[in-house]
Image (cartoon, rainbow, N blue to C red; front, side):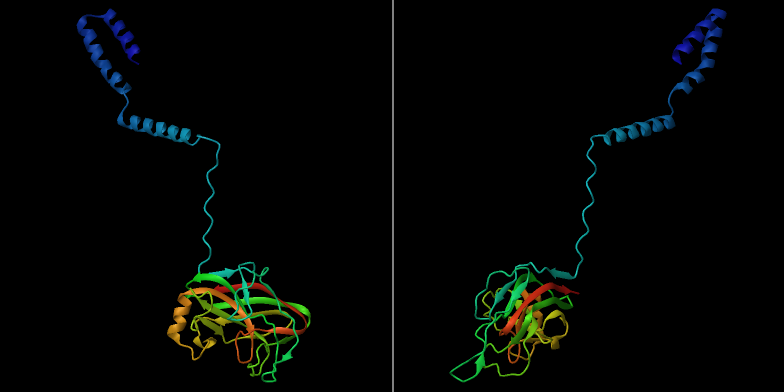
Length: 271
């Protein structure tokens, strides 16, 4: 555009006197000014340049963008798998047995014998407490559900694992809660058992116990105390299930004939 202005000015200079050249040059000034970029033009130019820079930045490599993070686990649910570190105790005075295989417990088989001291029968073998470690505060959760299956061949269950169990009733399964920092079960206030129970028998079974209903839980020595139960739920160290019946919640159960295996399918604590 400036070169064209120079050529036109030269032609005008050849056609007339100096005054006409100056006037002609002044008449051409608006054309020169129009050739200069206005503020709007500069803004458009900057937008185009920014778009080009962004396009170049987007072509920095062939790596795809990272995937979005997975959704958080659902709140208010503790789902303990069967292959957790479940341990078995014959009773509260026995140390832990080897870890169970996928939550399966074989009931020991032993015939009843007579205690010569008092003449009462008892089974000299038992499966009692089953527990997995769980450091948690379950105060805001509402229930525990256990889903299980018992397989075997014509088992005859007994809860007569000690001679002072003179109360009536079948061999059963219950749930239990264990306070933290009590590995040897020495804290007599640290074990709470479910009042609801299921009789041991072949086939599928399920048991759900309400955590908000104090009447569905009992300490070793009743009555149940709401304040103590609140402490237990806020300071859980382990949860589980166990076998017993009659006068005792979890003094164990055995099979006097046949065979039986307890298989844990699911242990769920939820709101």
